[in-house]
Length: 320
Image (cartoon, rainbow, N blue to C red; front, side):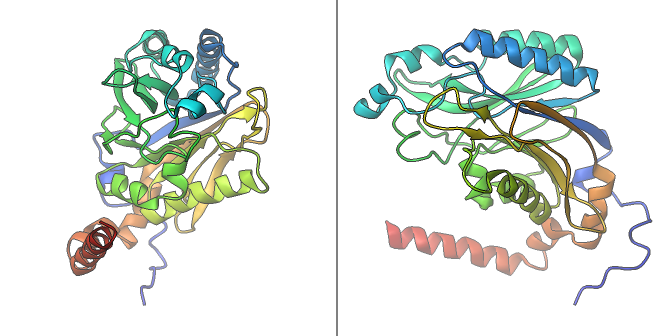
């Protein structure tokens, strides 16, 4: 049995990837409970930019918005009938560096902040669009994540899944992005992102107002953070203006509270709201002093890592 020393909570943490001195030991994160303007992308971008300015006034270093934050979301009869994106959605999509990105990047440069937001991205081949999230910093577009796990059939009728799981290097440290279903029901993605060096997991989501939705969003976010010994933040949509769904809100920021477990540092309700919290990577590094799981997985527990890999390979072979 592993026993935590009585003094470990007060001693300075040693250096791990989460508190690498190349990056700030503390950053301030903001998450928006965000209501998109239906079929008004320009208006939604205007609103997003106003909230970025509010977050900057609260000293936020990073401002996070939901899945498809600037786009209309919900059932589309034309997409469903064709099992492909309709002309209107193809027209709404834009490249990662398109007009919306340019506008948001200008504000990020002006204010010295980072911004993550969901959008419909034009694919690399005609007729293809992705459910994506852009990460923009003060120097411009840093990278784009394309959602891997799509909801069936609502999303698969419209979107094509991505084919990469990047960790983005930023001045705030390495950040990993998962979108909605990626984050909730596919924990191996968060594990891989943490293994690859992410110290903050970001979940732009569109979670509808099912029973206990906000409570579960907090629980899932804190579990992803605790099991990987990193911080995590989820930003959700709100409102019911898009038809077919009412979004639950409940945006949350949190992580391991050494020597205790996951703690929500800030959590939103069901209405439009901006939450802000400072996260302390030296604090979470103390968990790595006691439980250096990434080191163990590659050394003492490497046989278990190899076993997991073999089990996945066997399942794939049986299914093929």
